[in-house]
Each structure stands twice: as C-alpha cells, then as structure tokens.
Amino acid sequence: GILAYAPQRDPRRIALVRIPATNLDEGLLTHLDRRPVDHALADDQWDNYCAALVAEGWETVEVDAAPDLADSVFVEDAVVMFGDLAVIAHPGAESRRPETEAVERAVRNIPGITVATILAPGTLDGGDVLKVGSTVYVGASSRTNAEGIRQLRALLAPHGYEVVAVPLTKALHLKSAVTALPDGTVIGDPERVDVPSLFPRFLPVREPEGVAVVALSDESLLMSSAAPETAAMLSNLGYRVVTVDISEFEKLEGCVTCLSVRVR
Ligand code: CIR
Image (cartoon, rainbow, N blue to C red; front, side, top):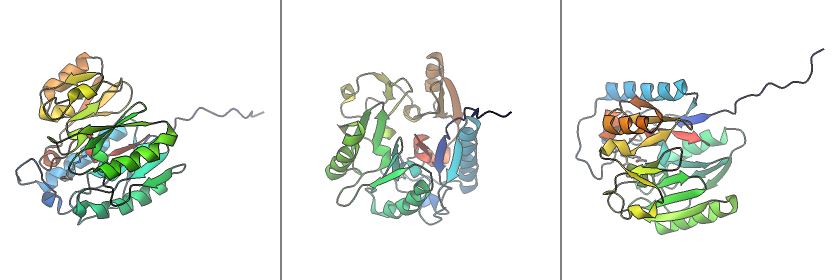
C-alpha cells in the first residue's frame, strides 16, 4: 500500500521584487549627478535580474507596481526580513513613504510571516540594515535616525538578534558601503564607512560597484557586472559568482541588493 512517506520538500525561497516605475529617472540622488536613464534598458535589466534569481532557485513574488513612485523598484528599503518576522520600514525620504503599503500587503500574503512596523518619528531604510548571523548592523545614515534604530533594537531583542548601530556619513545607505559574504565576512569600501574596524572580519574591495553582493546560497553570489575585479577575487575565494548588468539602477544609486528582498 501507499505509506505516509512524505517527500522532503525544499522550503520556499521567495524574493520580493517590484517592477520599475514609469518615472524611474526621477529617483532621488544624493551622491551622484543625474544622468539620463534608458527606460527600455532598465526594464530589460530588471527582467534579467529577476531571471538570475529564478535560475538560482528563488521564486520571485512581485509587489504591486507603483508606476508613479520613482524609487519603488528599490524594494529592499521598504521591508527587512528576519526569518519569519517582517519589519516594515519607515523611509527617511518623504517621497518614498508611500512605497511601504503595497510591500506590507505582499508580505502579509506569504504564509507564516509576522509583521512589525517602524513608526514615526522613527525612520529606517532597509538599505541601512545588514544581517550577519544574529548580528544586525544598522547604519545611522541620513535616512535612518536614532529613534528608528531604537525601535528596531526593541523589536529584535526578543528574537535573539543584537543590533549594532554604525555611524554612516559618507554613503547613502550602509549597504551602499558594505555587504556580507555567506561566511559572514563583511566586504566593502573602507572609505565609505566611518569606522571599518566595527566589523570583525572586513575585506576591502576597490571597485565601487563591488561592495554589493547578494548571497544567493552558501556558495553563490549575485553581483553587478560593473565590478569584474571583485567578481574574480570572490570567485578565487571559492564562490560561484553570477553577474548582472544593472547600470541604469546604479545611475540612481541602487545596487544588486536593493532590487529584491530575500525572504529568509
Ligand atoms: C534613493 O535615493 O532612495 C534611491 N534613488 C536609491 C535607493 C537605493 N537603495 C539602497 O541602496 N538600498
């Protein structure tokens, strides 16, 4: 007869993404001068980015489009995942605040997710939050304020995470300056973080676009094709590196991490 022999199913690996707005070229700029954005190319690059996630075993879930929210494609800033806990951000830039509503809706549709929210006067952008194991580095940036950091610390304490706040005056977001390899090594530009020695294992990289890596699994990384030296260095360290061209998003101070939220 047929025995109750449940096949081992892989847990769903979901990545939230959001299609670029029609006014993408009006996205906020802090450190870069405005350069023309090629919309058709941006759409192609976004498709390729999503395809790269799918090819690596991620299921992409689209947040409802927000055609008039220029920065909405940078979905990472609107929510941060800590296992089953979703923390809805309160973006530091006023123009980005309407982004969170549909992101929250999308997150609530995923079974098993609990939702918490950063509230005014607290501000927090997801791009300022870097998880390394149970340590959560948070950039005190122009977008994330002390109250936002306090709220995140209080929300995460019962879940066993330690929030380590990091002064950040030379980059837009913490993750525009540093990200983490699957083994917990923090890689980034020592010139763009105020105090690089705050990170116990720090690997400096030279290319500006090389600071951003998305850990797709324990052995594979997603990176921008604009950082070939860094890609070669990381592949020498034993990682399989997948690259995507995201030039149009880089013109708007976005990077590989900002274009998706990995639910994990
Ligand atoms: C902004 O200024 O908010 C957008 N133009 C770029 C956001 C990039 N997000 C990120 O680094 N996490």
